[in-house]
Length: 587
Ligand code: ATP
Image (cartoon, rainbow, N blue to C red; front, top):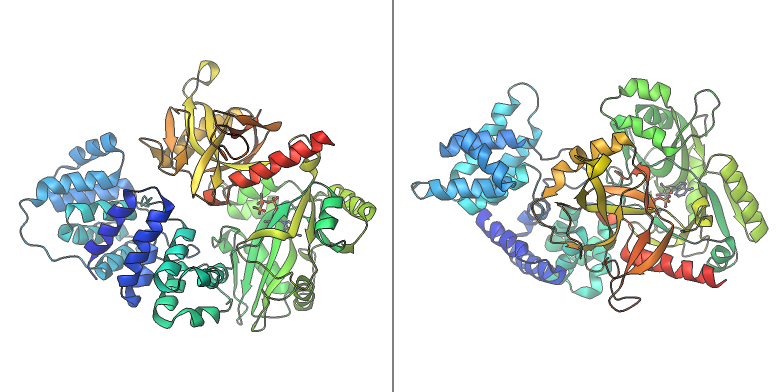
């Protein structure tokens, strides 16, 4: 297939912000595409070469790209560099440079999708000495034959700045529309939720049909998208929702991991965002290897930092030392050891357990491990009385946990991969404060600082995610809760996401001084949720011409780098929190 056909689709996608139109454009293209190319098409459209969980990523430095453009076009690097400062987007730079040059280039071979993909793959794989030269060579090779518009997208993808805004759910909608229709969308979504690989799902659907997708099972090595919990603020509500009786577990405050242990006892750890984090937790890997009596398992748990002197659980932030590049990993492991509490088993000895009820999965979990000092099972009790739940909750807090996780024990209590629902309900200590819970908001803009904050950001413009529209809706200006170090670090943290204008997926009535691609997620606690004409969160949903806003928002100090922006608190969740708050006031 010719790369230009895909580029035509990119141009069409870029000219719209409507999710429906994007779906339509993609569906039409998928229908025509060759099944053997579909996988690559899907990855490339999302700016990737592989599924999300694959460690190899594109994202070479702008400098390398400029060198390749200079090499191919003969234009001096400094001129291209100046243009980049002016344009801000490497794609536009490549397009402009080659537009001027190409008029004189007569001979070039049309680029195929395969060749572009192959060169990009070799660029991503290149390592060690000589790799920079190889990258420039591979890039120059395709830029030489690219039309200006093709070079725009090559430049963007290779620097990790594709940003077409095509969400996973849009691809799933388009696949359904192209091949089977709306009725079978659930089958496609489930296949994605248990494999986390859109390319694989697309390829199977195209070449073998929906029946083959129905038969897909979880497999060791492919992360399963995490099941998520709803929240309620009292044991009464929880028990009522659960039919009077359910399991309650300690809700540990750490890092969620999904461990895959294969038949050779090789272990891979995935984060809640499905990143491969095996290298960050070698101690967890060896503790798990010791504790497991079975192989071929997928289990989930929470890694919690513990005090080396007292053995007590510490706040979540202490694990973040593992991620800091400045901190030597071996020192971090000694100073901040973690303990793993396992709470689910999704696969055991060739059996997919995601469709089994919770208590069966728990039994499987108990069967496959021999608990140790560092690997334990989560504390669990099956309760049906409010007083007992309150007592267990107090115990959980005393032991350093955040609260409880209620889990349905009904016949239908399957593991709902990738979904948030009432089969799991979280009950946390913050729910007893004024605004019921912290929220995870996405930075979409910033305002220049004044006075003491001159030179840094004065406030950030924060948004919730509207999952129906696939957009980001503003909900507050965040200016409190930052220490000096964070304030100083924010500009460079946000630099990679800086845009010339508001991102097409952002809905804002405020004019920010700086705009960002929605990427960075931060945890925020406010005093209450109010109606406001200034913010666009769930606009006109509760009251005409008013959105929801968070009053007196404070940053809790926790960057949610484990969350994708599309996993931030949704606009609808905020509506529900607002309603619950009203109910409490009435009481
Ligand atoms: P969410 O994961 O629901 O989007 P979040 O990341 O902000 O929200 P919380 O709201 O605090 O986290 O609660 C959910 C998280 O609690 C899970 O993703 C998991 O990491 C953690 N957790 C701790 N203990 C348990 C447990 N016993 N069972 C399930 N999850 C648990």
